[in-house]
Image (cartoon, rainbow over all chains, first blue to last red; front, side, top):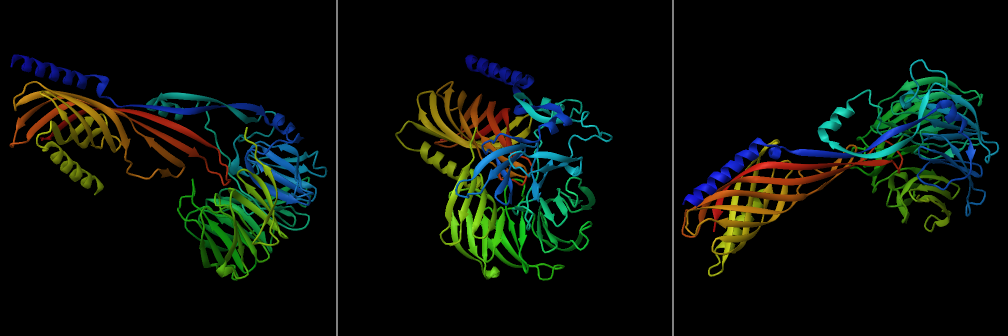
Length: 421
Length: 184
């Protein structure tokens, strides 16, 4: 019995010792990647914004088709120039370095591209030797990261051109202290936002994910809550004419018949270009919060709603809206999809990128009762440009081209693959 | 509701396990509190194993709501300090616990992957008979469970190839454990 009592006393002692020590304290360790910026002056950065040797595709982004050339955005890095004289054998002929580039549009011999909040005009007369002709400073202010209040001299502006990465593990409490330290020279890997476009003769044709588009003598771009109108009647000397404030969550812009169809996370907006220097809202259609590019073809507008990171919804569908009364668009039909992104319409054929499910080809002769005629699988699609039976499809693993003259049996013409490093 | 069903199932298995006549088997069911820096939390569990004169080796599982809801699966060894019905005992056990998340793994900016980790407990107790074939027991001890979360983050961007990065959190949750239960 004495032995048992001794055991109990020892046990209880150990128990209370535990209480008094750190043994009763929860611990948390946080492992993350510390990104430390590498800077160059803006002048140095701009000196490198020109054609260089071609590079393999890595992260495909927006595209714009102009004549026999495809300009394909490499997300955050620049633009691939692809000679597409023979769609069955596209030739990657060069790469334009443009840090943080997301969007582009082409008109005549000029290409307009963004770099952070700046817009750069490039002369593409010789697509193998593209050179900048104009730098527009801090146009899209919501994308600004390096222009300080009074800065004007590119020599004094520091631009982040890369990051050194270091995996770091600290106590969770310590991390909180660091992240609230304003003087610490540490930045997270800020990620660019962006999207894409489309248009007419002399103007390059883009996809529905565009946030740049050109109508007549104006370049229109959208930021997350703004619409910018830029006069490009003098291409080498563009002038910003208007900035319209829009609700937050603007993503895409699509021109049709002197109107702009703007896709946002909360709905679709229609802007009238009666006065091209100052677009005015004509109508809107509100939907659940989701990611949504939009295209239009006259009486109908087609909007894809998708779920996914940042989209804040579980809905994945194609909405067909009657826009015959532009002031009051009406939802007419809904079609379930898996994870739709960009879309394009060519006559009575509607092509919809459905993410990992591939490319859907519909007979859209009756827009309110679309008929799925073919599902092209085996590629994760993002955006598509369709014209005259020829589809150029941006997918995660490369740039595909199809002849869909017979929509039931599209023929793969070529694939320019992504080459993972 | 699922947790209640789980408790009922555990109870049934434990009783039937411990009452197999002629077999040197022992089952127990218990419930109690975990107390630590993160506050108090409920726990319950059951064990089933083979007993010797004063030693019992059991497999156990249960529910542990401290920090993150999880299901531990452990091996436990118990030593009684006498062969009498009223006796103190000591126990130690360890294993793995599986998180049973109460919310989905998606948030606005990315996804979360939770992983379980090491789980162990040790302590002392006292049992006394309450029925012909059962004993009531009380325990007090120390328990630790490790838990990991990996967050896959993606910034806002429209493109299909938004860059992502990951963050990892590793937790060690140290608790005082107090239980009471029935042994069959």
